Length: 568
Image (tube, rainbow, N blue to C red; front, top):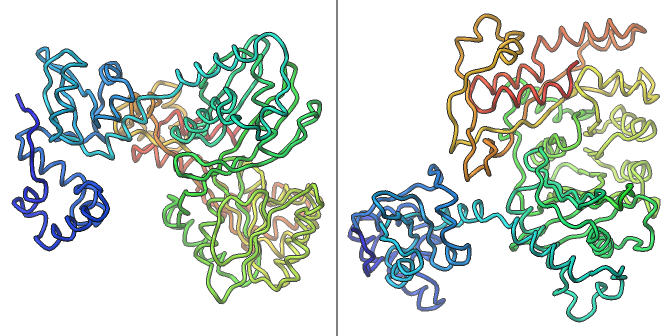
């Protein structure tokens, strides 16, 4: 049975040819200066990777190295240790065989941790070696804080009792307010939302209970159900954080605030709405530490990427990105802005809210309470001599007309519009009251997009389509349906049992060529739609989604789900 043993890490890495004498000397000097662990210094100095160190230790101990990214341990075995114990000893219980537990150690030289685990688990232990970062990610995934959140909700319920309490004075910055049950509950909810990669938090009072849901990869998941009496306390605290009127419970309100979770700053956009059983609160979470993606990382088909880059580099005109809320429109526009952002160009954005910070451009936050509206900011922006203007959304006829006049008079204008597909976008602009000639002269390209969930690579397996799924695929694939291979995720620890991890985009594009513009200028919508379909040549959102299905990146069910958003 493999046991830990004391190993001089530096000597081991030199012996295995992974580290030089000069690098070791530098790391040892840094260790004396800072007191940090030698292995952490070596990794942060990019001398040796964390995985390479773990594999070297495994070879020395004649133990197995486990790649946790592709390992699916059993949750009931992992939870033989509490989260605190797993983090303290940097270990995880992987599996069991022949009466022994195989335990993954991030530090297999820790004799004290080994002996303590034998005492805690009361079983023989087989040591394996794992990379520390992968271990911590697994711990984050497994030890969901649902139970802790429910416990804090019960504590808050007991704290409130049966007598209504006014929280205005208690939570407005009084000493000890940070220890109040409502504050601890909300902090834990935000921490769990950040861990789960949630984009939204929904707090919804029902008749007999309060429900909290997270939107993860575009789909809502129930996180907690608690006593409905705590709903008003949560809403009140969130209103205080947002600077809203805590006495007003009859009208909807919008606000925003920023919080820090795990050294990450998150901007929270909050909306309250009075419902039958109390105020419903929805919060959009915008992670300011999230890196901006480039256009070449958005999974666009090659011809779409090429034409979009060509369109946004024109000196004037309008490019619109369409789709429902949460479909990644702003991400696409900012990816384009990042490529256009040079010292020779002046770029101004008008947004509500500012979702990305991009150095070198002038970003303006709309503020309706002081009459700083889209219309007013956009008029002012055009007097600032910009080359490129990004308008967060074409919300009304006035904003659309100002933007299109700017596009006609020598500016490149980027914006979004809420429509189902590219063909309906010019028609929607006409319905808003924008003159037909203005749409025809200014609009250069329309891009529609959706986000589909990606199959978890840790639990992907072959899948046989059901009869209705084969018939749906047959519309695009014809008789080749049964010749294709399909996949899905069975659900594992890494994806919280959903079978999906992350999202990617699907796209369709309409270029306003001469035939399409002639169709738009006719009084018959059918002429325009026929010209638009001919220009698109069948490259629709559905076809792009099915291409991802064939590549094994998403499921048939997911492609059907997003297709049904825009098809009859």
